Length: 102
Length: 258
Image (cartoon, rainbow over all chains, first blue to last red; front, top):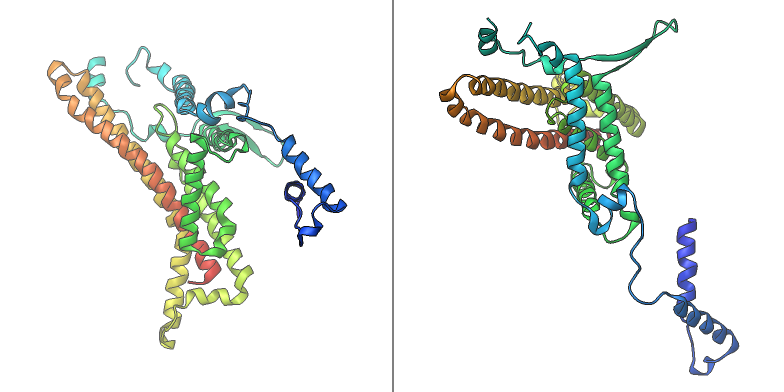
């Protein structure tokens, strides 16, 4: 079992109430201890809606969650266009500035 | 004279595929020469785009996907489905390989559709380089999985004994021809599409500068250019998918022996 799975398992165990075989066993010190653990676990959970991730940067602006948009595609096309035009101008087009073709 | 050349002379439509050298490092080391050419540059850009797209659409590992992760997930899902239908359960181990090939070929095809840019997949070194490497890999995999039984691939089931030598020869040739046909299909499609677009746009431009009547008529070829560009985008996707699907079917031959 890898670390993440093991951690998830141990967390889950803290959240599961103890199995009680008979009604008499309720309140036995062992189970009571475990019940406190369970109660504490649920008390410790954050309340209310999850806070929005406050991240900035390119990824947060154009890719994450509801911000995801087509903008990066257009930016890529524009960038490739500018780069390609520069290359083409340097290797080819500048020779045609004054002469049509030679 | 200039006007005459301007109207009559047509640029070579194959000029766009020219390899240009940006810089090179030559050295006394075994006469080796390391150079960056335009195909190299565009392949580097494609690699950055593939990695960047995959990394940026992680959406902070959240379960609910963003639109970008939906794009990635549906690409992933369609490749996975294709593998399941061609190879079966055993083939899922090759999902990363086929997924990478698909994205890489797709973006190599698409980047060439940006005006003034260069299509890496329009060079035989790209297509055939890939397909030869795939065939060698698949053959090694076949021998690793089945040892000498791999040769059973060259004898279809239920062949009369007399026909076996002939069929083995034919099957061997057809097996080896895959190395060429897989890459050739992709490259020829890319070259064809780009040459067509270039020729059409040259003619349209000549019509646009040819006078008021021709300018009016040039709307028709211009509409064709737009339609062909749409077709080229579709072909970029289709060819990338076909390339991946055939790779999967070659893998299937090596893993399941027909």
